[in-house]
Length: 86
Image 1 (cartoon, rainbow, N blue to C red):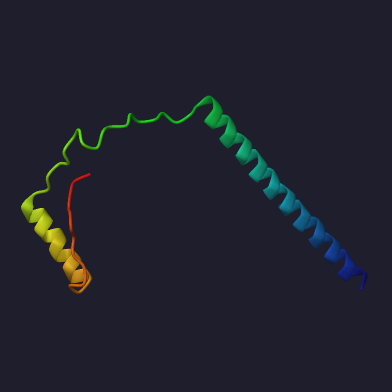
Image 2 (image 1 turned 180 degrees about the vertical axis):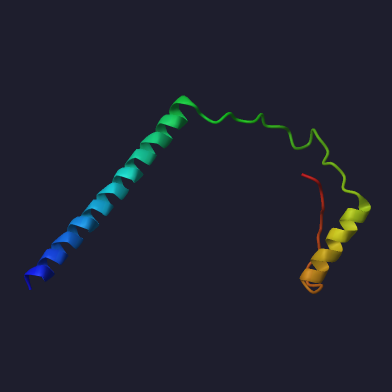
């Protein structure tokens, strides 16, 4: 019976160690994220006006192939309203 309690004690110590290490990793990760966002923020892309540039046209054959693929996959239940290059 003494070995059983020793095993439970070791298991408890192991679980507490793993839990504390995981909490430490989470805490340090959040600190790192806040530091990175503060001192090296992501550069924002300039916003372009949606009406200033027309979307690039898609080749008619490509648009037809995409429409046929959508029709085949959905068994004719759906269709593409608008196909444009991003």
